[in-house]
Length: 112
Ligand SMILES: [Zn+2]
Ligand SMILES: [Zn+2]
Image (cartoon, rainbow, N blue to C red):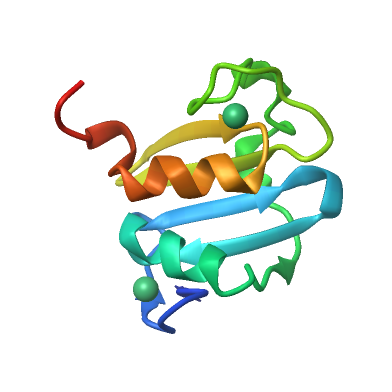
């Protein structure tokens, strides 16, 4: 079963796209591509109830925020890229930092 992008409604295959979750809130979202994270957050971040089960934990093991390097607290947000069988996770101390990170192109940004 495929999910739908939380922003544009396009189908998101199991082996592609992005999943976001806020573990403390038991909330999740799916995205067909990273660019759709940005308008979704700006327009109020409409989460759906649920968790990302395949991650196996609540993301604390990821350590620090991928944007600012700060500690992860109760407001942490995880973003998981699905690429075939791979799951590539990043964590953020809060939703604002996921927004900043996604605006800059995530891990694949240029100029760093
Ligand atoms: Zn989309
Ligand atoms: Zn941060």
